[in-house]
Structures are given as structure tokens and as C-alpha cells.
Length: 365
Image (cartoon, rainbow, N blue to C red; front, side, top):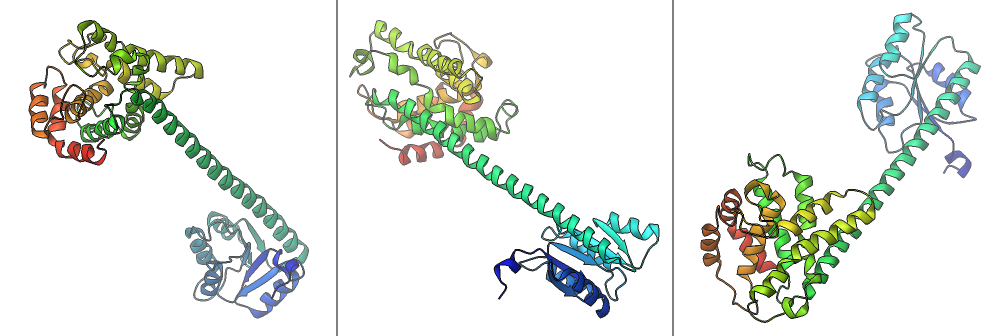
């Protein structure tokens, strides 16, 4: 068993088909380094590819069966051994031989007969460089993992904050239950189905769909500003009360805009959340609110939410209505095609309506 001092030594693999050369080089190195030897290319590759690879390889070129050039070529082609520095020790002294060695990835080239001080100096230099490179790589790996960990934490906090904010609004409306969770999944289903559609492919990609999924729960955040007497009324609203209820769109938009301004920067998911909060009650024919937008002037995010929101409102029980059968909802959505809703989004809903019903069942109140 190696003692602790021996275990901290760098390991040098010496590769040469001549026993005398192995003994000579091994004898030079053994006091300062752990030495492994190989009398051929195949054996050298096996040692290098083991679980504890050497820190440096001293490699002869002129060997039978597999010469040093081929050994170096295979070492550099293998991700497991690519980072091991190779120094050629060889009697081949032509410029083109040395050039070939460096082209194959060697870090140094020493010609025989060997000068022990030169060999020891070169070995020390390249082991020091490798140690520094390994340290930097380990530090980079550590930092990357830390950044990844912190990013996951930030995203998790962001997601929880969004959901808590949305849930705060929903808890004031006892009828809506899991509404925010269902509509979040409805929006993603529609977006995934439409991302290759010519009208939507420029907007919908994996990143924007993720932003949509995160933003969707904030569509009714403005309800926190609606009086309880209206928000919780167990019946149909009067025209005057409905006008007040309609302000939840602008209240929600303004609240999110204020949060974004406080951050002092543009935040992608908050931009989308503002669009959804403000415009999800707009209608394709311009008869919606709060701005009376029509057609493509309505943001895509809001158009997607409109279909999701109406489906869920019809599907679920409210104080003023019973839940509606899925088949009846399909009929109503068809009737709203090109009037209340973007026709292509309705068509997407019709093609995947069974998935909507599955989500409704999974997150039932």
C-alpha cells in the first residue's frame, strides 16, 4: 500500500520497447514521481485508459506493432485521455519528425541521447502546467455547478412567487379553485400544438412557451383590486358591477408593470404576463375589453389565454351556473370561431380537446 506522501506524487507513464531505456528514464523519475512503464503502444493505451490515468506520458516513437505517433493519435482521439500531456522521447531528430509530433498534440519533443537535467526540467514544467490546467478546470466545473444550482434556486423562487401571487387573487374568488393551474396547462397545450403553424412559429418556441406557462397564472391578478361585494357576488352582476369587474384587466397589468419598474429592468415573463393580464378579455371581432382590440392586434399570448379561460369558465361550476358538458363547450367554442376567438387557435383546441378534458379532470376542484 502506498504511503500518503507517495499518493500525492504525480504519476508518469514511460513508454518504450527497450528495457534499458525504461530502466534509465524510470530511474531518473522514481524519487520525485510515481512511475509506470509500458513496453508497447497497446499496453500504454490500456494503462492510460484505466480508472487512474497518468498525469504525464513520456513516449518513444520507434516501437514495433504500434509506433508512438499512433499511440499519441489514439490518446488524443479519446476524451478520457485527451488531456494527458505527451512528451516524445525519441532518436528521430528530423524537423519533420518533431513537427509531426506537435501536430498530433504532443506538448514537447526531446531527442536521444537524453540529457537527464533536460528531461527532469521538461517533466516538471509540463506537470506544473497540467496541475494548473486541472485546477482551473475543476474551478470552472465547480463554478458552473454553483451557477446551475443558483439558477435553479432563482427559477424555483420565481415560480413559487408567481404562483403565490396568482393564488392570492384566486383565494378571494372561492369558485375558481384550481383555475390558474388548469389554464396554465391549457395554454401550454395550445402553444405546443401551434408552434409549427405558419402564423405562430415566429413567436412560439420552447423558450416563449415556457414563459407563457409561467405567466399564465397571473392573468387574473387584478382581481385583488375588485371589491368583495362584486367579486364574491353569488349571482349575475349588474351592468354597473360588470364595468367595475372589467377593470381587473387594467389593474392586473398596472400591478405587474409597477413590479417590473421596481426591478429596474425588462423581464421577459413579466412582459408576457402584462399582455395576458390586460388583453385576455379582448375578442377577435373587437367587442371585448378593456381596449376593444381586434384580430392580430390582440397579443398572441392573450389570444391563447382567451380560449383557455373561457373553456375553464364553461367547464367548471360557478355560483351562478352549473358546469357544462364537454360536448356543449365544443359547440360554443366553434360558434366563437372568428368572433370571440382567433380561428386558428379554436381549430387547435378542437384538434386536442380531449387533452383539455384530461387536464380538467386531473386538476378538478
